[in-house]
Image (tube, rainbow, N blue to C red; front, side):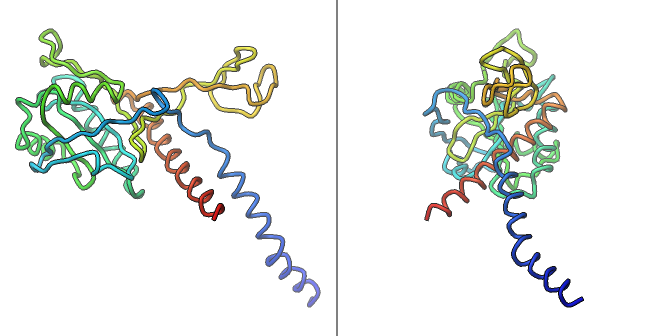
Length: 250
């Protein structure tokens, strides 16, 4: 009996940590990092807007944070309420993670003053602890929309008089637009796969699958919202992994 206990103790002290290390190490490298959208050096440019509390919000307030951005207006008769509710859902699902924020730009700054945005936030029952609804110069808002790779403009023929994308955008801690993938295509045989794999399921060549980036996420579709949440968690894992690499390099 003593011999069995001795071997059990040795297993726990020597063998088990090794097995756990290998298991964890494989888990850390099992995900595919998010794509960078745009050129390699593309970042959201410096901005300065006014939020629902009449406080100036700049890109410095989002430094070192992953954030989700979109473009709305408070009198929108179509997609904006759905987009806002879905942003609220995302915020709730990611609430346990630190360094995640949200940013909604109005495309109708003439009407959407800080007071109007504040009333809208209350009406939509928004948690503003890490979420800013911002207004400002119309041209600056429309220009910065382009850096998120979405559109915003005034259009008399559009519902409510404004044209804007119904997409949500993930921005990483360095201000770069990131996204997951819609599918993966083999660069050798052209076979497609919904998931990343070590080898192409058709021609069996390794490291042959190339992802098609989503770019941005339809803020009105429930299944897309779930994909966005998953991709934000993947981005969090990237930073976790990079931190470990940095520690190991010291």
